[in-house]
Length: 145
Length: 84
Image (tube, rainbow over all chains, first blue to last red; front, side):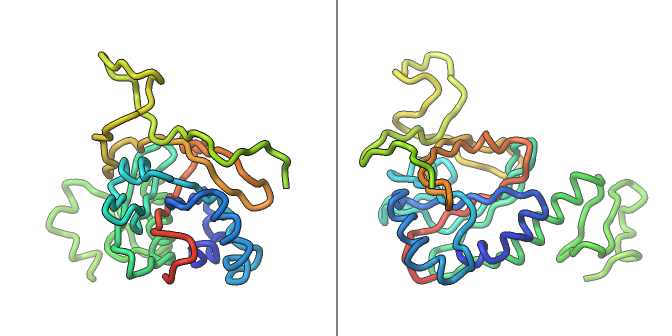
Protein backbone atom coordinates (compact mmCIF):
# COMPACT_ATOMS: atom_id res chain seq x y z
CA UNK A 1 0.00 0.00 0.00
CA UNK A 2 2.82 2.37 0.89
CA UNK A 3 4.46 1.53 -2.44
CA UNK A 4 1.35 2.64 -4.32
CA UNK A 5 1.18 5.75 -2.14
CA UNK A 6 4.79 6.57 -3.01
CA UNK A 7 3.83 6.67 -6.70
CA UNK A 8 0.64 8.60 -6.00
CA UNK A 9 1.86 11.84 -7.66
CA UNK A 10 2.24 9.89 -10.90
CA UNK A 11 -1.26 8.40 -10.61
CA UNK A 12 -2.60 11.87 -9.88
CA UNK A 13 -0.83 13.25 -12.94
CA UNK A 14 -2.69 10.65 -15.03
CA UNK A 15 -5.97 11.71 -13.37
CA UNK A 16 -6.34 8.33 -11.68
CA UNK A 17 -8.28 7.95 -8.45
CA UNK A 18 -6.75 5.34 -6.17
CA UNK A 19 -8.76 3.52 -3.51
CA UNK A 20 -7.36 0.96 -1.11
CA UNK A 21 -9.61 -1.51 0.64
CA UNK A 22 -9.27 -4.20 3.28
CA UNK A 23 -11.48 -5.83 5.85
CA UNK A 24 -10.01 -3.57 8.56
CA UNK A 25 -12.25 -0.90 10.03
CA UNK A 26 -11.85 2.80 9.28
CA UNK A 27 -10.57 3.15 12.84
CA UNK A 28 -7.69 0.77 12.20
CA UNK A 29 -6.93 2.51 8.90
CA UNK A 30 -6.60 5.80 10.75
CA UNK A 31 -4.16 4.43 13.30
CA UNK A 32 -2.17 2.50 10.67
CA UNK A 33 -1.78 5.76 8.81
CA UNK A 34 -0.68 7.59 11.96
CA UNK A 35 1.59 4.88 13.35
CA UNK A 36 3.24 3.42 10.30
CA UNK A 37 2.27 4.60 6.82
CA UNK A 38 3.05 8.24 7.56
CA UNK A 39 6.55 7.09 8.50
CA UNK A 40 7.00 5.11 5.28
CA UNK A 41 5.72 7.75 2.89
CA UNK A 42 5.81 11.50 3.31
CA UNK A 43 2.34 12.60 4.35
CA UNK A 44 1.09 9.01 4.52
CA UNK A 45 -1.44 7.42 2.20
CA UNK A 46 -3.20 10.28 0.41
CA UNK A 47 -6.09 8.28 -1.05
CA UNK A 48 -9.25 6.98 0.64
CA UNK A 49 -8.72 3.80 2.67
CA UNK A 50 -11.93 1.81 2.48
CA UNK A 51 -13.27 -0.75 4.90
CA UNK A 52 -14.77 -4.02 3.68
CA UNK A 53 -15.88 -5.50 6.98
CA UNK A 54 -17.57 -8.82 6.24
CA UNK A 55 -15.88 -9.07 2.86
CA UNK A 56 -18.99 -8.46 0.77
CA UNK A 57 -17.18 -6.13 -1.60
CA UNK A 58 -14.22 -8.49 -1.84
CA UNK A 59 -16.65 -11.30 -2.62
CA UNK A 60 -18.12 -9.27 -5.47
CA UNK A 61 -14.60 -8.75 -6.81
CA UNK A 62 -13.56 -12.37 -6.35
CA UNK A 63 -10.84 -11.62 -3.81
CA UNK A 64 -12.43 -12.49 -0.47
CA UNK A 65 -10.89 -15.49 1.29
CA UNK A 66 -13.70 -16.61 3.55
CA UNK A 67 -11.52 -19.13 5.41
CA UNK A 68 -9.11 -16.39 6.44
CA UNK A 69 -11.76 -13.68 6.62
CA UNK A 70 -9.71 -11.21 4.60
CA UNK A 71 -9.51 -9.76 1.11
CA UNK A 72 -6.44 -11.09 -0.67
CA UNK A 73 -4.21 -8.87 -2.78
CA UNK A 74 -6.17 -7.88 -5.86
CA UNK A 75 -6.04 -4.75 -7.93
CA UNK A 76 -8.41 -3.54 -10.57
CA UNK A 77 -8.20 -0.82 -13.21
CA UNK A 78 -11.55 0.74 -14.11
CA UNK A 79 -11.93 3.08 -17.08
CA UNK A 80 -14.02 6.28 -17.24
CA UNK A 81 -16.94 4.28 -18.71
CA UNK A 82 -16.88 2.23 -15.49
CA UNK A 83 -15.62 -0.88 -17.27
CA UNK A 84 -13.07 -3.13 -15.55
CA UNK A 85 -10.01 -3.09 -17.79
CA UNK A 86 -7.52 -5.14 -15.81
CA UNK A 87 -7.21 -7.19 -12.69
CA UNK A 88 -4.32 -8.84 -10.91
CA UNK A 89 -4.85 -11.10 -7.94
CA UNK A 90 -1.97 -12.44 -5.85
CA UNK A 91 -1.83 -14.65 -2.80
CA UNK A 92 -0.81 -12.38 0.04
CA UNK A 93 2.87 -13.35 0.37
CA UNK A 94 3.99 -11.42 -2.70
CA UNK A 95 3.54 -7.68 -2.93
CA UNK A 96 2.47 -5.76 -6.00
CA UNK A 97 4.63 -3.97 -8.53
CA UNK A 98 3.13 -0.47 -8.65
CA UNK A 99 5.36 0.44 -11.61
CA UNK A 100 3.62 -2.26 -13.66
CA UNK A 101 0.24 -0.97 -12.50
CA UNK A 102 1.23 2.50 -13.66
CA UNK A 103 2.45 1.12 -17.00
CA UNK A 104 -0.88 -0.64 -17.58
CA UNK A 105 -2.85 2.50 -16.75
CA UNK A 106 -0.78 4.46 -19.28
CA UNK A 107 -1.28 1.74 -21.90
CA UNK A 108 -5.05 1.61 -21.37
CA UNK A 109 -5.30 5.38 -21.48
CA UNK A 110 -3.36 5.37 -24.74
CA UNK A 111 -5.54 2.64 -26.22
CA UNK A 112 -8.77 4.44 -25.31
CA UNK A 113 -7.47 7.73 -26.68
CA UNK A 114 -6.05 6.46 -29.96
CA UNK A 115 -7.73 3.15 -30.84
CA UNK A 116 -4.25 1.70 -31.31
CA UNK A 117 -3.10 -1.40 -29.45
CA UNK A 118 0.04 -1.69 -27.38
CA UNK A 119 2.39 -4.66 -27.74
CA UNK A 120 3.86 -6.57 -24.83
CA UNK A 121 5.77 -4.45 -22.33
CA UNK A 122 4.76 -1.20 -24.06
CA UNK A 123 5.92 2.04 -22.49
CA UNK A 124 4.87 5.51 -23.66
CA UNK A 125 6.90 6.43 -26.73
CA UNK A 126 7.25 2.81 -27.88
CA UNK A 127 5.71 1.65 -31.12
CA UNK A 128 1.98 0.88 -31.14
CA UNK A 129 0.00 -1.18 -33.60
CA UNK A 130 -3.13 -0.26 -35.51
CA UNK A 131 -5.24 -3.39 -35.87
CA UNK A 132 -6.60 -4.19 -39.30
CA UNK A 133 -6.38 -6.74 -42.12
CA UNK A 134 -3.14 -5.24 -43.45
CA UNK A 135 -1.33 -6.02 -40.21
CA UNK A 136 -2.23 -9.69 -40.17
CA UNK A 137 0.93 -11.76 -40.55
CA UNK A 138 3.00 -8.57 -40.74
CA UNK A 139 3.44 -7.71 -37.09
CA UNK A 140 7.00 -9.09 -37.26
CA UNK A 141 7.90 -6.31 -39.70
CA UNK A 142 7.20 -3.60 -37.16
CA UNK A 143 7.56 -5.24 -33.77
CA UNK A 144 9.65 -7.92 -32.13
CA UNK A 145 9.82 -8.87 -28.47
CA UNK B 1 -9.88 17.23 10.27
CA UNK B 2 -13.63 17.53 9.77
CA UNK B 3 -16.07 17.02 12.59
CA UNK B 4 -18.22 14.43 10.89
CA UNK B 5 -20.44 12.52 13.25
CA UNK B 6 -19.44 8.96 13.69
CA UNK B 7 -20.49 6.00 15.75
CA UNK B 8 -18.84 2.76 16.76
CA UNK B 9 -21.15 0.65 14.66
CA UNK B 10 -22.70 1.85 11.45
CA UNK B 11 -24.38 -0.26 8.80
CA UNK B 12 -22.58 -0.14 5.48
CA UNK B 13 -24.06 -0.43 2.02
CA UNK B 14 -21.53 -2.82 0.46
CA UNK B 15 -22.00 -3.97 -3.14
CA UNK B 16 -24.80 -2.37 -5.12
CA UNK B 17 -26.50 -3.84 -8.14
CA UNK B 18 -29.42 -3.10 -10.39
CA UNK B 19 -32.69 -4.16 -8.88
CA UNK B 20 -33.67 -7.44 -10.43
CA UNK B 21 -37.23 -8.41 -11.16
CA UNK B 22 -38.86 -10.38 -8.38
CA UNK B 23 -36.42 -9.04 -5.82
CA UNK B 24 -38.19 -8.71 -2.50
CA UNK B 25 -35.30 -7.12 -0.65
CA UNK B 26 -36.20 -4.66 2.08
CA UNK B 27 -33.58 -2.31 0.69
CA UNK B 28 -34.07 -2.38 -3.07
CA UNK B 29 -30.94 -2.73 -5.12
CA UNK B 30 -28.75 -3.76 -2.23
CA UNK B 31 -27.54 -7.29 -1.98
CA UNK B 32 -28.38 -8.76 1.37
CA UNK B 33 -27.50 -12.40 0.99
CA UNK B 34 -25.67 -14.22 -1.75
CA UNK B 35 -23.45 -12.26 -4.08
CA UNK B 36 -23.38 -14.13 -7.36
CA UNK B 37 -21.77 -11.55 -9.57
CA UNK B 38 -18.02 -11.33 -9.74
CA UNK B 39 -16.02 -8.60 -11.43
CA UNK B 40 -14.74 -9.48 -14.90
CA UNK B 41 -12.50 -7.61 -17.29
CA UNK B 42 -14.43 -5.99 -20.12
CA UNK B 43 -17.57 -5.85 -17.98
CA UNK B 44 -19.03 -2.99 -16.00
CA UNK B 45 -17.51 -2.57 -12.55
CA UNK B 46 -19.65 -3.60 -9.60
CA UNK B 47 -20.60 -0.51 -7.67
CA UNK B 48 -20.29 -0.42 -3.89
CA UNK B 49 -20.24 1.91 -0.95
CA UNK B 50 -17.87 1.52 1.97
CA UNK B 51 -16.88 3.51 5.01
CA UNK B 52 -13.46 5.03 4.61
CA UNK B 53 -10.70 6.92 6.32
CA UNK B 54 -9.36 9.78 4.23
CA UNK B 55 -6.26 11.66 5.32
CA UNK B 56 -7.17 15.21 6.29
CA UNK B 57 -10.88 14.54 5.95
CA UNK B 58 -11.57 11.87 8.56
CA UNK B 59 -14.26 9.24 8.19
CA UNK B 60 -16.47 9.38 5.13
CA UNK B 61 -18.48 6.88 3.10
CA UNK B 62 -17.07 6.35 -0.39
CA UNK B 63 -19.16 5.14 -3.31
CA UNK B 64 -17.27 3.76 -6.29
CA UNK B 65 -19.67 5.28 -8.82
CA UNK B 66 -18.89 8.75 -7.46
CA UNK B 67 -15.68 8.41 -9.47
CA UNK B 68 -17.44 7.46 -12.71
CA UNK B 69 -15.85 9.35 -15.59
CA UNK B 70 -12.35 9.00 -14.15
CA UNK B 71 -9.79 6.23 -14.22
CA UNK B 72 -9.95 4.28 -10.97
CA UNK B 73 -7.52 1.86 -9.38
CA UNK B 74 -8.80 -0.30 -6.53
CA UNK B 75 -6.25 -2.14 -4.41
CA UNK B 76 -7.48 -4.89 -2.10
CA UNK B 77 -4.98 -6.12 0.50
CA UNK B 78 -5.10 -8.60 3.38
CA UNK B 79 -4.74 -6.27 6.31
CA UNK B 80 -3.34 -3.16 7.93
CA UNK B 81 -0.10 -3.64 9.87
CA UNK B 82 0.89 -6.75 7.92
CA UNK B 83 4.27 -7.48 6.42
CA UNK B 84 4.16 -6.94 2.68
